[in-house]
Length: 588
Picture 1: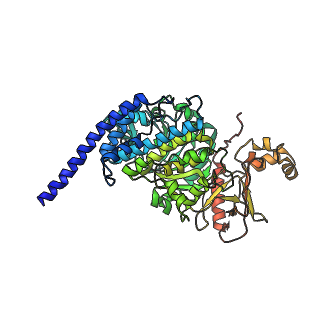
Picture 2: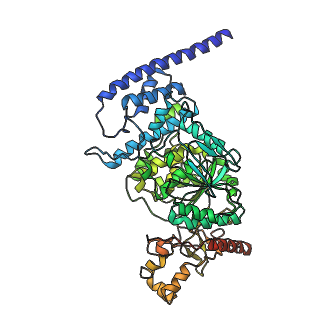
Picture 3: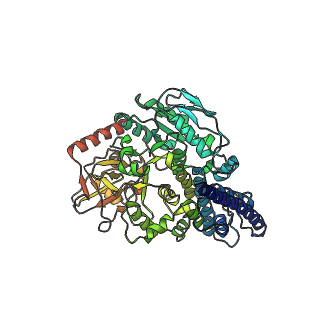
């Protein structure tokens, strides 16, 4: 036994010594490479560090020697710094060298960023980050200000916390957060969120501009009517006006626990202007202080009590639940989209040392797909369909999935890649896919909800999401026939003016109809191979109206029962009566 133990220890020491020697060799190699490589323009366009390390490690290791994580992590980041001392993960780089295409340049940049994020996450998990973690975090997450906390303002606008003081969600009190400079920002943020949400780890997160504050008021009234017990955080970056906050405060029911969270201190000011409109959703999902979140858009309505989403099977399986978008046929507008996304998969270096697979390649190699997620991957990467996800409501366990949320920032804000998709939607699930994080799509297809006509068709602004049993989970678009108060001012003389003029005697009569409450008796889940979605551009409500038709096959048309219709009407009355505020499409 002694001989066996001694032999094992000897092999461990030999491997460790070899790793140390190899580290020195690799650093010398990259020190020389630094002066021999041609300049390629941007500070993040470093050479393929992982590939070089893998090639050199394999010269010194047996093929089955894997997982020397501490040495690998140290070698990777040391070589990165030696090769390019000024590297950082900058999604905004636009210094394309003369003669190079912006697409190729961005692809190389993003490929490096995604590799570094995945390696960083693996090294955090192995507690193997380099000792200079403060400098490393500054390079990894340049848009985040380390050692900063948000500003929290209570719903009555009477109490404010900042400068490291953080309220405890769900009960009175606060704590002073002390940033540990010896630990990563990821670790520090996890600790802050854990302490802040110690008594209420789950919560609702919202983010919206001043122009949508009336929608938010309506949603909050519906949540109060449903006796919601989850705390709520309204996240902004200092751009939600005092007037909007006052309106929410004045209208908030006493049974709702809400905080305004100004995350502007968390942002490096050089990057603040990059986050606007739907891009603020990334700030909301990352910088809220809950551990498990339900993000919901201001114009969404959930007949299902919101806390119930945490109980859905898909969320329990993965810690991340997404919902499908309308399955209409719209392919990518640019030929570089699919190749660029495909190139962002884990590298052989990551596969060898951290066990990361190429998720796109693995799915496309299978002859059949038995999962909802696999079908979506094939639809995007083979059929090149660009619309898959409705991000109006999503459920995420941040304790498991913070890195893919950060990766989504880089994907969604990269100048060329952001043109490939509509808004933030696809960046969520693609970030999970490309960082090897588990996620699930709810299996039912998106539906049109409203009044079913004699042709088995529903036309409406509202996009519905039903459960497997046909019950309505949630929908977006609010309760009005048209959510934009000025929609009729455009439509009256636009593409469908003849239809409007034949139905209404005046623009004022049509305006009343646009502002009236929708009634729902059915959801149509179309078989798009037979009846594709129609509507959109050129249709009513400024092109926000879509129509779904189906043959009356089981499951394709869901007729709501009397109790459901009555409940939806009660919710609708609460929503409509919440405020006189309106949403405008065109700036006043």
